Image (cartoon, protein in one colour):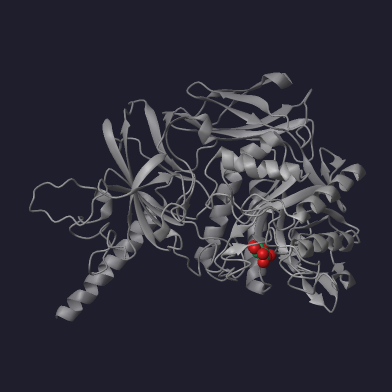
Length: 612
Ligand code: GCU
């Protein structure tokens, strides 16, 4: 009898968990466009945290989640005060250590450097909610799975370590003190995006801003204001309202471009935008002109800084505002090499992008996942074109529908967030994914999704090459669906060496612009030897020179993003002397030292500039 009872009880709770987990997934509201243009309270700062490797703050001793357990008590999210001395509470945020948020936990506590699991984070804050306003709790990113609670009540769950999410908390805020608790879990899983094997550090936690946004009851939720596809004379897009007063007159004003147009939103709160362009200074890396744009309605208004440019391909050419361009790029991770950890703010970001400018770049590949909105806004301001990417990386679970939905959600959130950023010219749907039919279906659906959300930008992926003797062949069937032929090749490092690499050549099966997404070699900054000795700066320098010779033979070569601007941390790189958990392919070391190859690439790009 007892056995039967136990079986039905665990079945009941598992079903209940499934319902709660799924319903929580829909607790997230659609994303507020341009969060930084809103009125918000910044919840960044020092958050108390509790390391919980066995998730005792989430499950009772029968492994039933407290979220749905009968008692409903015991989870670390209710941050209860001791009601009477008889109560047993085995945790206490006030007495726990704290860490800086935004910030990964790995770089803030020695014991968390390699930690993979759950950490609970709590912040207290004051609020004065107004009756005629709506409130949203916004997270720039939490890696990887976040369960979010406000004042002891669950708001919902989010998965994905690099895209923003938010929960509407209207009517859930106390007038006075509130507290938010996040259960962040960076455990890797085979069916997630990314999967278990990556070549970067698995930084966990609340790595980007946490904001409490306040908007009018009917507000401007989303908008797109960009040049129409391949049309320098037309601004196209939409405005989307949310709330009860859906039909409104909305004025789009771009004073410096002599533009002021009024549209009327329909009963769904949406209006299309079609504005002829009379005079405009088009955005380019050399002239990154951003216009002050205002969107004004009866109940809400918001302003943004937007650049206007077109990007297209024509045969093997890439045209920016109708003019041929060569993408003088470099790849980079979202990591500060000098103080290892996720980029912490504009100072970090500006440092990396300034190094790219010093390298004579007009383009950066923000690998292998969405970087922060501020990073992309800085690229707008500093004049660097951007390849944006989702972490569909290596050996994904191609036949798992939930994995695909996760990938599509991350791609959609990236495009929704950055669709007004002139610097972004490429949506990349993945990196080095091994060929198979299920992978082709999965990636093709992502390409179609990207195009359905935004037909004004290029869609690409870092493909794999395969070799036949000394010939590197690029014939990945996915290439047919992409605007660029982009691939990673490590001739001279993983294949061959500096002595023999010039015997290699490329056989590219597509008549499209070629933008090589990766090549490079490890070099330990400051280690010098002859140019056939691996790990030396001289080896890396000669490899770059040979790569330029080899790649320049490709007729359709229109760009490259060598791997990589700075050394970065990776658990895969364990050589005790040369690596020590660092991938050393950076052109700059983790001490900020520019290696010899930095200058080799910089002068190569100087030569390229003369030709375009
Ligand atoms: C791959 C991969 C990178 C990795 C690099 C390397 O191409 O895309 O993420 O860091 O090679 O091996 O250094």
